Length: 127
Ligand SMILES: C=C(N)C(=O)O
Image 1: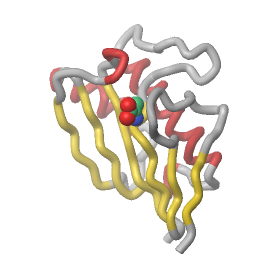
Image 2 (image 1 turned 90 degrees about the horizontal axis):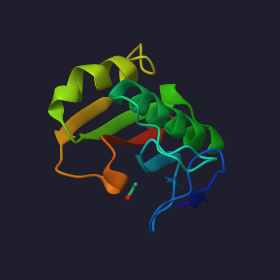
Image 3 (image 1 turned 180 degrees about the horizontal axis):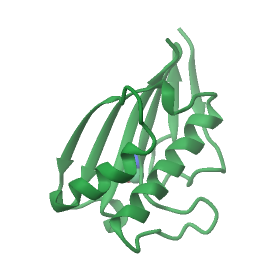
């Protein structure tokens, strides 16, 4: 069994005791990403569409650092602070998964780190 910790400057540094991603036997477990800009560490949250795209950009950076891409993603978990954002989040998120989208759940939660509106984690695998 092999285990590799992924850390890239192209995505935000972890804001707690977790790794951006951990790869075990060609399966990549990504921590939840929020819309923090990797360089400025500022939140990108003018609106939920922009925020969701910023989250996906961070996910893409972590995937890329590990040698994966969106087509390798098999499962996502979406946490939103307001389920009224469901449609807008879907519209932005869906642009990254146009064919055979990953399995997924979307859950409304009372609060998220740094009071963001959306956090997304995922699992990718080299099949
Ligand atoms: C942002 C996170 N992934 C966390 O706090 O766990």
